[in-house]
Amino acid sequence: MKKKRILSIITAALIAGSVLTACSGSTTETGVSSPDAVSQSESMTSSEGTSSEKQNTSSAVTDIINDAELFTERDLSGDYEQDGAVTVTGSGTSFKVSGDGAKADGSVLTISQEGTYIFIGTVTDGRIVVEADDSAKIQLVFNGFSITSSDYSALYVKNADKVFITLADGSDNTVSDGSEYKADSEESTVDSAIFSKCDLTVNGTGSLTVKGNMSHAVVSKDDLKIASGTLTVTSVGSAVCGKDSVRIADGTINITSGGDGIKSTNDEDTDKGFIYIGGGSITIKSETDGIQAETAFVSENAVIDIVSGGGSENSSKTHVDNFGGWGGWNDSAASGSEDSTSAKGIKTGGDMNIKSGTITIDSADDSVHSNGNITIADGTLSVTSGDDGIHADTSLTIDGGKVTVTKSYEALESSAVIINGGDIDVTSSDDGINCGGGSDSSAMGGRMGQNSFTADSDVYLKITGGTVKVNAGGDGLDSNNTITIEGGTIYVDGPTDNGNGAIDFETTATISGGTMIAVGSSGMAESFSEDSAQASILYAFTSSHSANEKITLTSSTGEEILSYTSAKSFNAVNLSSPQLKSGEKYTLTAGSESVTIELDSNTYSNVQGGMGGGMGGGMLGGKMW
Image (tube, rainbow, N blue to C red; front, side, top):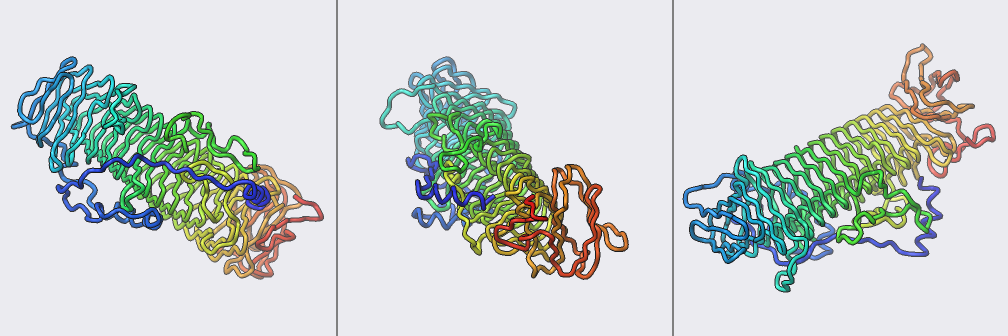
């Protein structure tokens, strides 16, 4: 719908500039990288970069995620030695210690030495503090253990090299903090039921319930790894946070969050701030973003189910702002929350790579959002969005898999959209596939205004393969520059109003392979450019046709070349097939209306102004359809 927006966008730009709000975590100290990695990439602990450097390192971070050894053998094993371990028994407001390395002082247990500590029993009001040497690796084995702190973090890792929380087989464990912490200026940054200043790993085959009653549930100021186990996490603020990274190998994770579900926030070090999910089953219900990565997001082999911001029924597109454009997400649901900037499903400030797995999202804001590039290689992605289904500032590439957008404002949106394969089925109230140019200011905050509309070589739609189905209330296929179709099978149910077209482009649209059937209104209908290598037909009928009417194109010998049953009413159709040849005659039938068309060139159109580019403006018999 870009043509109708230009005036309101220019007006808005003269009145006010866009505001982009970024989410970030606190900048307290980080821990020392663990030396026990199997083959940990040296680049994972490289020197910090400046903000300007960070803007160009998103793809490098994604490469690090893809290539690095993200988990050590000890991370993944979940094993522990009982011989020589210290046993800690909780009872009421006290701890009983059997062994060396830990000391109880009233309701506070302090661990000061490297080793394995096995916890059993119930502490109704107390806390565990880990304060050991920088080189200490400490394993906390929860074996039927529950701890609640009324006025502080229940587990506070103040200093160590790395801490493992191992969930013993078959055990049920609980960690919960108080709703209001006691005043402590020295430790004012501690704000979660489990809070660690060093690397933290959760593993084992038992279960752990974590309740963040004051703010967050689980926080690591370094790397947070979840290797296995069953985690049930609830929080007033964000639920699961790893400043430098969050890495999930496996396990079952259920999150209910008043803020973000899972997030990584390091915006100072150019190779950190990422989230990697390599497996497991993850369910998130969050008031704001489901998953937020500062630099990059990679997932494979996981089953992820997210509902953010109350879902699409709480759409960010339910009101119009004062400038005539669509307003940002109404974040009243998270009023007062530090995470109240957006309610996206999965969001990253850099690149995103979905390799495989199954992801289902119902979001008030964009379902999938990247400030860089998105690549979908395989798997199943199903989204229901109150705003964009999938948005990437720079490029969106779909190489395979099944991508379904059941509800959206705009379904697929990026400067460049490249479809090389897969099964894509999208529905939108506005544009189905929109290549707009410029970044969408809904990126890491709310939207104010829209994309720029200058023709740009970085702006284009290219389809080389796959099956693409689009049902759009606005333009079906929309590019502010070029559209190139080289293959694939494309079905477009376009607009029923005359302010949009089934295909809409700024400069050229060429087709050299594949099959396309696009139906819609004729008011802004555009045909393919004359230099297309494959023949096409744009035809406006003399009357409107109802939904569910069958469209067929047959050769002069009666062979059926194309057929399609429209999902909506229409009066124009745009067809192309490798079987169409210039100089041949064809019969086009829609319902009871049938016409004979003779192709005298590769591009046939009976729509005035419908021959490529510009504002289109189809007139038929002096009547605007």
